[in-house]
Image 1 (cartoon, rainbow, N blue to C red):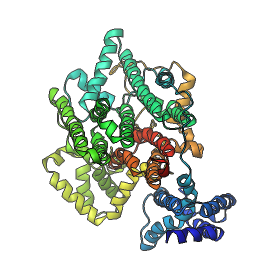
Image 2: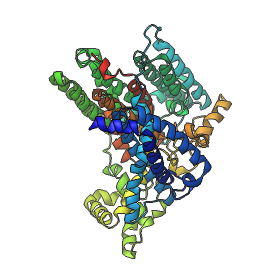
Image 3: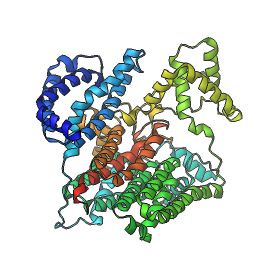
Image 4: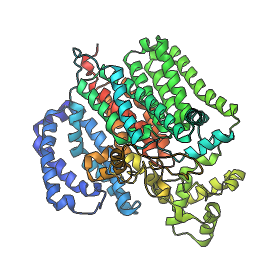
Length: 593
């Protein structure tokens, strides 16, 4: 059957390409974020030229590529078009259009677009794997490290003494007062506070402490990425390794995060090491498990990830599951390694909590999505007076603070936390009642809050590094605190570079340029991870696709977080390029011994 379909596509490639183009003409207007009902792609000259130009490679793909490559291309294209269509609808109408006709159109558009886009995507799935030229001398670890340290060091000079995130105030206050809470990982609070205290003791100012923290963190991150590049270069052509190194060195969000007080940069770097450990295990499970150094590295990477972020278990548990599957012939040994890793990840962070007698985190921290859904209901639904009063009692009458792409204002100071802690059952009973009455609003709230993670055309999170709107400050590149509270003197030692960084982090100039804009969108890296998984499956190398399981776990955790921001999605943005280079360079199945 497969052979017959493939023969038909090859023989009637021109006719099939024409049909695909006609279906794409119908679907394209609904994939445009500015206005899904516009006629741009029906009668616009540029749209006509683009579709006609792409019809030639579509025809070539249908005539030359295998059915397997085309099928995987269509699978990727269907998911891509579904997300693009949903995102366009949310952008144009601030919600999902009601009615059965809209639902049918919403499902039909991906099927109409998938054959055309899938044929284009099949070029990736039909491409031959990249080959490494072993005769070239390897670039040493020190060279990569020096490159990243230099680039991140220049960012530090431009934003001296570093980027102070909004979490800094809470963490440094805990360290100085000794009254800890577990809202932030205790280990990171101690790490940050100790370096600030050391810098202040050695050089006599909190500014020196801030600079010392930034310097230590950027050097650690430079070492992690240098290791990733040396790992990759043994498996891919040098040009690909250099392109990966250029991404780590030159993309502004890497440098800005490297000198920030946020927990995410080190967490992102460790996420890369976790995926590379799994890749090494997939190459030779026996050699990995018989190496104490490699097993210890996997355990320590998992542990430090859990010491840095609470959602690290969403990566570590899938990684352990992947390890057990990969080592099916040595399953008992793999189970012992995973059990040790999980025990360390669960017990040692708690040991830090008990050591400093940190206050327990209130469960309201997990209410981002429910509070966001209720706040959207309060601001968008036609409620009765009793319903409006009921919601106002829980949210202090501040429903106007609803932000579609950020749930923190919903579960922040206006939420009645004391009442919730006294009777959480009452809150969830109300939550379920409104969910049954307004399911579409609940779905819209969830999609709007997470749109930056799955919509390739999303721009709502382009200001994720910094913005003038207070509710969206998740990594402010300007010093946000009064000098009398925290005497840190912020100044730029490289003003031209500071202006360039501000152009990307404040003004988002990258939005003017389509390709450049995508490099700053978290959703781009979500789709790169999806592409890696499908590419490896297409080549019948599913064992390497298991290396993406930690990223799948983190993807799910971010979906239900307070919002999708560059710092939250940073593990995906750091791992996806590395995994893509490895996926493109793996040998084809027939070349595997």
